[in-house]
Image (cartoon, rainbow, N blue to C red; front, top):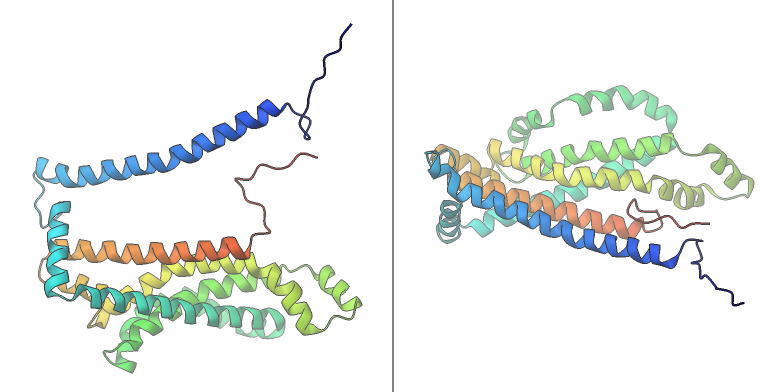
Length: 285
């Protein structure tokens, strides 16, 4: 009498189930971008054809073709490339400076709890104060140049980084610190080997927030008193009742923000590669 041998996967489930799950996952990974593209195509088509169909004036909602025509004219006559790079460079520079300052102050206050208690009311007051309200003040201080929008961007980016890093330092596992001290680790090694890796997820989350806020900060600076940049084009287009120019500038600002956010997420994936992802299937014992 022959016996049948049933093969099992290492996890204890039939191998066919794993293949079926993998096939469904690949199908979902392929279908999701296609669905996103379909939604984008439908939205663009609606933007092009619905406004004239419902009699919406072009000075309220222009068609996509109007945006393209205005974009070409801005490229040829209004030096669009200069304005784009002015905004992008200030957003990137302000994001870098604001992130560095926020991380440094966050770690410093985390290492000095007594100073954090002394300065926390003032930090809270500055965090609550609307950052955009400082832009006119910066113009009075620094004049009509690049400094007001740069300082506004740094200030907007600074606080999310500071708060995220400081929160990570507050909830740090003290037993782990005491264990490191028991093994005679120096303060520098404890900081770089334990504190910094522990706070890295919070820091990266703050950087993702700061990447989007940087575009807002530089735009506010350009709207209030800039002479170059996409924010200046928005203000100029508003004064000229040129709605397509305003839309084009907003779209380019969105592109800058998306690229900055994407770069941060790529860096985060490389830095935090050791953390499990929500999309990963947990391995069975």
